[in-house]
Structures are given as structure tokens and as C-alpha cells.
Image (tube, rainbow, N blue to C red):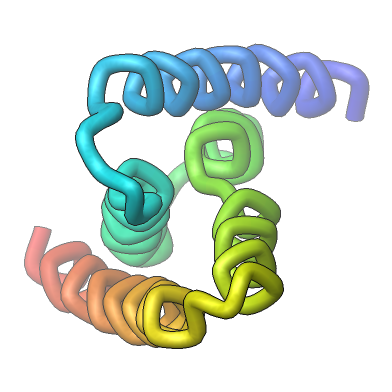
Length: 117
């Protein structure tokens, strides 16, 4: 268990670092496209990994650690609520719709790809 905790922590460090860099390098919109992008990419990758025969330690490192640190449900939630509270209803509901629908679609296609690897 301690080894898996270390794998999760190391993966989380890597994933959060990648998300931070993505946020710093991709600041080009008043809409949270970076959050949407990392969530969709992470959803696709988790779909692929779901189909692979990975050891528990590797799964913890990749899924719980890296993808858990890379994707961000809390930022998506905060961005959406801020839009709604500021009266930007279209942006708020568009953010909710895009994150939920695109992430589900990405996971589905990730699973399709993973089954064919």
C-alpha cells in the first residue's frame, strides 16, 4: 500500500505539473479552454488505459496519479459557477455541457481505441 501511495503521489506531481504548464502556456481565451482540453484529453486517455492489462501499481501511477493530477473537475465546477453567478448564463451552461459531453465522448472513443490495441 505504501508503494502505491508513493506512485499516486509521484504521478500526481507529474500530472499537476503538466496541468499547470498547460494553463500557463495556453492562456488565450476568456473561456476555460485549457480546463476543457485537459479534461477531454484525460478522459480519452483513461478510456484507453481502462482496456489495458496494467499492474495495480502502474494503474495507480497513471490513472490515480498522473490523470488525477492532470484533469480537474474542481476547476471546471468553479469556472461554471463563476459564470453563472456573474450572469453569464450561456458561458456557464456551455462550459457544463461541453465538459460533460466531450469528456464522455472522449472516454468512449478511448475505450474503442484501447480495445483494439
